[in-house]
Each structure stands twice: as structure tokens, then as C-alpha cells.
Length: 490
Image (cartoon, rainbow, N blue to C red):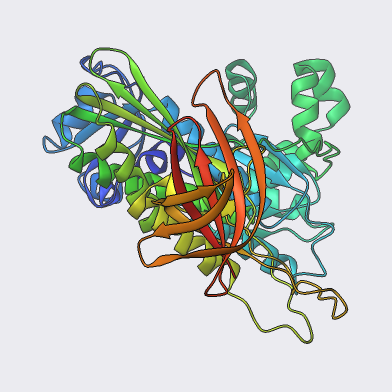
């Protein structure tokens, strides 16, 4: 896979409508507050710029003289790195064994024949995967890496070179297709070699003695001899997108438009790898030169872009940046969507992706600390509760029909103030608003104390049965020196 006009598409991936404008990207690095040098040359340009006469190789001054309305942009290093990562992610969605390079990626297609009807289908799948992440690629399938590189660089779309016909395909390419040193190219042109067919006709041993090993290797390549092996490399799980503003942005609202584009680009990359967004790392580059970085954890992985934007907005509204923003960097912490395996006799549960989407929307609406599952923390404090990530059970809990019935305590929050009558140190009557009556039976006290170093508690609990037949938990709080009704057994 060879990414065409990668510096241009690196900018266009997160900036809508950029490809429709007359725009050219120069080979000088873009820096805010510094003008691009007019002597820098055009690397690539949009179709609208080509229609005005701008071509790669023109200097900035020449391009502006040809088209005064032309917009010039420099190389955006961060956006270029993100685009290269997106290309690798797209290829990873089709093949397993990859070897990235600066302007493309090699994919071993030998084990993909069972998934696609033909090699042409594999090439089309790779091209479609690249378009999903906002890139345009030429795909070539050949026996060797160098032959595939030549075909992808000089043929648009998808190209399949049948095995044994490599020399026939290369013979039609001009000499400029090969990356040769200037001295060797000048010698070959002096000998009248203009095409790869003419180069293949030269005796490799003789030209090696006369012009060096570089020329001998080029002759062997033009004859279809390519033994360069593909070396797969481990793929990093790093998903990051960035955006640089042309001006300072002091409000939160304009940031959301750029963040929406960044979220869409990240979701597209993660989807190629069968992953979802499990968390976000937002970096705000301020005009003062400092970076405001914040880590946002999601309750459940999701791929819903509007929910992610709402989540980011809630964070920015709660803690606005302390200055004008000149750049954004958004990273995604990868996560796996929760798989669903239905049982034969269990009722169907919610779809994992819809459940994750609902949880993400709830977090963005009410806050991260108010969505989840109530769990008992590791604490001796009575009725202590904490909120953990929501994770519904995979199956119905097993029931033991021989187990005796149990009582559950319905805790009152907050506890109800009570007035207790004592006789010889025993509880005889409890009055707590509508719950009042004579104590028929009493058990206790059950004492619990702790946390003397912070928020201390010291409780004496009594299980009482009132004359109406109800079972209640009455507590004396020694810290507050008061009685209270904590709950009812049901």
C-alpha cells in the first residue's frame, strides 16, 4: 500500500472541506507565527490547485504567481505521524503481518486467500480500508516488495501482477520510476536507456563491473528478480490525533468542532483494529506555551462519536482551559467491546454496543461518579457503599431451592431520627415518626467503630421487633450522641 499525497490527506482527515479548496503543501515544516519560506517546494496539491496550473516541484513563489488565490500550508509533523498510524491501522484490519514504511505499509497476503475470492479482492479491501480512515492509497500485489513498490507508486488504484509476468509489467515503466543515484541515472541516459525494458536488456555482470552494484541490482529487478523479504513488525497500540489552529481560541464552543473531527478519526482507526474507545487523553496547548492535559476514563468502551464529544464537553465545562488554545491533541485508550453470549434458557440482554453507548451518555449527563454498580467497599463502616463500573452478569445466578429464606435490610438514607425509651438498660419503646411501638424482642448491641484518623464512626446497633410485627435496626451513634432508625428488615 502506497499512500498518495500523504501530507495533504494528513491535513484533510480532520479538516472538512480542505480537499475542495485550491491548496498546496510545501516541504517546509509549518510553525505558528512564522511565515513559510517562498523557496520551499510544493510536495502535493489539491485538484482545484492543479486546475489553476500548480504542480509538485514549484516553489512557493512560483505557485503563488500562477494562482494568487492559492493557500499554502507546511508539513504538519503531528498530523503526518497520525496519518501514518491510521494507514497501519487500516492495513491491520485486512492482514495480520505488516511492515510499515514512511509512505506506505507492506502486507503479507499469502494467508488471505480464504477470506477473499481473488488477489484483486484483497487489493480492493485494502483500498477501502484506507478510505475509511480518510486516506487514498494505491495498492499493488506482486511476488516481491520492490516490484510492488514500483507498481503502487506509478499506477493508480489496485494492481495485481501475476507471478511470472513481473518483467513484462516493469518493461512499460520509464527509467524515472526507479530510485537511482543522479550519477547512475546520467550514465544510463548517456547510454540511451530510457525505459526499464532497455535496462533489463543490459548484461547484469558487465554493467556491474562498469557501473557498480547499484546498476546490477537495478537490472536484476527489471528482469523480475526480487528476493527482498517482508519483515513483520509488532504494531503499537497508540492512537492519537492532533489539530493546530491558525488563531487563538479562547472559547470552549469552537474547540468542540475540532474535537468532533478528531473523535471521528480515532473511532475509524480503532474500528479497523476491532477496538473501541475505553478512555480519552486530551491535551490542550495554550498560547502561553504550556499544555493542559487531562485523562478521561469511560465507564464502558464505545464507538459513538456524539457521546464522546458530549463527554469532552462536560470535562471542558467543568474545568475550562486557563488560557487561549492554539492546538489540540486527543489520544484514545483502546478497549474491547463487551462480548455477548446468549444462553439457551436465559432471556436476551442488552446489546453490548448499545449498553456501552447508554453508559457513556449517562456519564456525560450526570457525571462519572454517579453511574455504575453499587458495591460494598473494604470498610467496617456500617452500610458503606461505593460505585464500581457497571458490568452486568453473564448469566442468571444459580438458586438453591433448599436454602432457607433470608432477610434483607432496607437502609434508610438518611437515617431517621428516633426517640428510644430505656428500662433497666433495655429498649422498651421506639418512636420514629410513623414507625412507633412497643419493643417485643431485642437483640444486640452490635458494635462497630473505626476511622479515628479522619471521619470517625462509633455505632451500637440493635435488632428490634415492634408490636406491629416489623423488624427494625435501631442504632445509637456515640459520636453524635443520638438515636436513629437505620432501616427495616424485609
